[in-house]
Length: 154
Image (cartoon, rainbow, N blue to C red; front, side, top):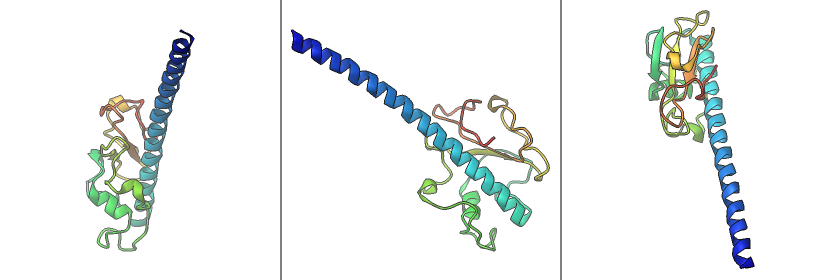
């Protein structure tokens, strides 16, 4: 009888620990996506400072759009046509091996302004205002929807 009681207590404690670890894992994944979206936004801005245009081929103001392979190629200095100086704006580490996708496997979304002195327009209302930032990059989060609680660059 005592053995069953001890086993029940151990099972309850194990369930509590596993539940806590799941919450930590979700928080870490969200923090990773926020950090990645900020890195992408900074790379977009550095690229604009260098070349006077955005790394995407979209005509600004534009968005929301998926960050595609062309953007990533231009930011990681693999394109001599759109990055003739071969500058590494974004480190092509293991983070970007599947393209510019968030930790849930979805492409990051972005909006860009016509220039650095303007605010990005076209950000979905659900995401909240991007303020005066000329680039807005966000993840659609674990559920795949736009929400102000999802990771974003602003």
